[in-house]
Length: 296
Image (cartoon, rainbow, N blue to C red; front, side, top):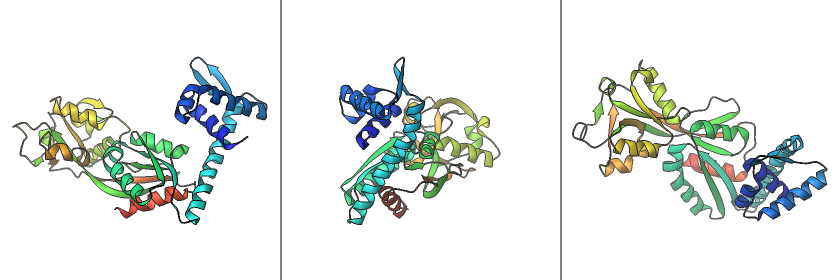
């Protein structure tokens, strides 16, 4: 049993497909099959069952997968520790982020980090806050940046930087030029919101509850799974929305959208860096975490 076999095995489990695993690892499907044949031969048990179009691990495969993840993580930590000892920061890191920090905050920070440490490779996985928190809990990503503090005891969250929610409307005469709007004015307006599980949605619900209104007190006409979709809908005149100011700075500067603050609502929230409280961080993860915290 070698690390390459375990790496291929883990990717097959994660993708539930020999062909998708081969594509992700840039191998031929026959090479993946041969790795798995040799691994099964060494273990003396089948590791996968083919059920329709999916390849699922057997009970032996499930058992091995947990150990494979730990061994692969330990190998990464060992290599990074040696590189750090030799005065290098190098290796690969998978980072998770919810939509707003993933699309508007982290890309330039990752670029700045790689300028400082050019031998580093960082992959960025974007999902809603709930999905990223689950990925950190399950160990699929070492570090996540999300728009709402997680409630799981398994996680350690550090406040990163503030972000403000604003009302976003098309630049039409009825709104153009205004800086403030009241909750009472918003009640009859068609509102587009993010899906449940989004950090922006959670922040909006908390702020409205603090104001004694609740989301049910507004006229919600649509839920959308991305901030980009919401911006396009607002531009098309479908309705208005309440989203992170960071996501619409450029559009508002060019008058493609118009942003307003809500007079009677406190809407400043923070992004959070999330790691697993029970797992040791790899040297590269720690270096990236230290870099993010230095930007506060």
